[in-house]
Image (cartoon, rainbow, N blue to C red; front, side, top):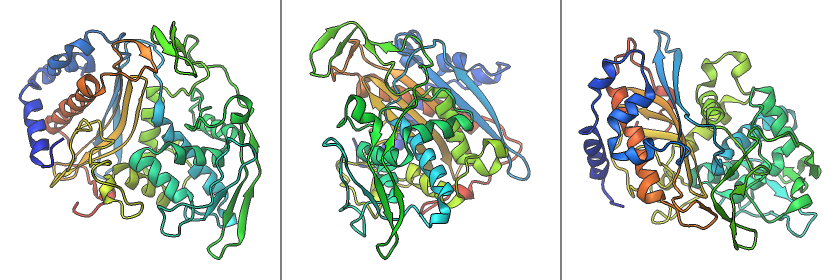
Length: 422
């Protein structure tokens, strides 16, 4: 990783010179697959083998009218119906569920900042009464969400999931059209089998330390069938003891979040004020903007919690545009509001990408499987060699398309100017 903004300029230059965007203007209607083949020849090994790489891409163009109202045109390239492990992208629906629940409890005076104390009823539960990363030294939804979105912290996600509850989460997701999402694993493997179905009691406090809301232990009963009958991956896998086993890993009891649902959920979070009432999540606008700010921030921009810049460099979870390979981003007019997933050889990024200076905006979600050995859990994957460069160049290619795409109305992006310098 290089500590200079010249890295970004170089990335753009090297990517752009190989893109032949004139091709796309001779094609009507726009064909995403053909466009990618014409502009990403350096990644032919992935594009020519989409089944092996479980390749899935969703791209949305955004056109504004005179009132800045957006209209969306979405293009999909999902050649095969394959199971894709969602990994940390489930933090998006968990966040949405938490904000919906928070909104429903507003009469209790519960807020993101309310101290949140988690108890335990099983040895595997994590009793949490302190948070040294917060100003108050007390845990809260605010800090859990910050850590989930800034550095993809799994234990924070687990605590938020316990607050939301498995049954409540799936009911709310279903109510808003996401009937095929399955989130049974809270990303904390401390509890197994039946104990994993039980969430510990939680108490929320007022600023002066009084109890304002108590949540009893929750038992998860939600068990709808898995949307993909044959949800497996690999030719070998590791069992719970780390021993290599012949045969694919069965993901039927694992989390499931289809890339199209992921893309749509990000669109609704970003563009909620412009959508139909039935598409809007019932969350406050301040809470929505709080999450978006965390989604677009670089770890070093966070004043609390404070992160070690060497470990959590600027592009730490920015797979699009930067390929998670740029240590310091300087003087850049771009922002990537995103959520990522990375596990077992699966790489996923879901983002709203904005260029304030050049008035560019688009939505992009992509998943690629880079596990040449097909060994699930083996720990040897081609993330840096193959996956991250592909996601970087894919996004740069579509960014270049957006730069050349003619728009009747230039978008006003000031509502997303959530950071100093833009």
